[in-house]
Image (cartoon, rainbow, N blue to C red; front, side, top):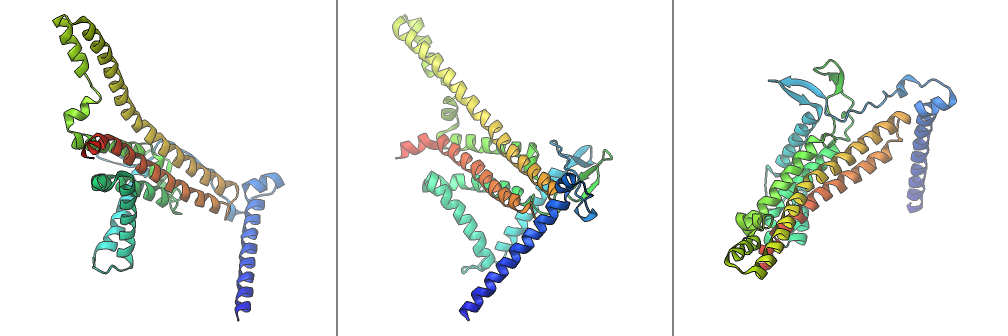
Length: 318
């Protein structure tokens, strides 16, 4: 019986491989790529529209003069899906969780353990909500953009051209920018909450030593005055550089996510156009991996910068 089961499994695997190779061969030979080499006409069922890439989000309609774009629709769709999933998972909370509640608790606990392992238990509760929200939102945007109806359902836009109703939210530079701005705000808020607003801002505008040097200059203490004034200007310059480094994070966060997600979308569109049917499946797997990596990078860097912002308070407590 065991040998018979193994034989059936082997035959099933061989049959599946034959089917996959057959679909790949049909897509390669009769698709646009193979048809152009062989000089044959592509069958109608394999005709795929040429990829049309628009970096700016495309407007669908306007509400009170405000354009509603396909990426905005996609971001709303992501929020609705996430709210629906967590509502279904937690609407009947029990001490002994069911499958859905257990799934939600595993996701939250895994993210909390990740934050606690990096920031320590003392500050994990402060950092966790923002870091977890960024991770889940970026990941959901990336994964939902792989659904078949994204970029395939089209309508006539307010400018009269055909535009897809759904387009990956992460491929609109405004979405990564908005997440990056929120990440920046949270990091600065954590620093001011832990150290106090004046002490935290004093790390960027450190004029204490410069002020002492000016006072000593008026008192005639020339040697110490020159030293303090010189190092005071250096401290002020370093603080301003640090402030610019915080602002540059917004740019790096934005274009890292935007660039990777846009490149992935173009790769999928081009692959499905050149070789239809199943050739695109490996690229979908690659996009699943890239989406996870980008969500981890975005949330992880927010966590690291948050730890750096509150580190002085943490060291004093120790």
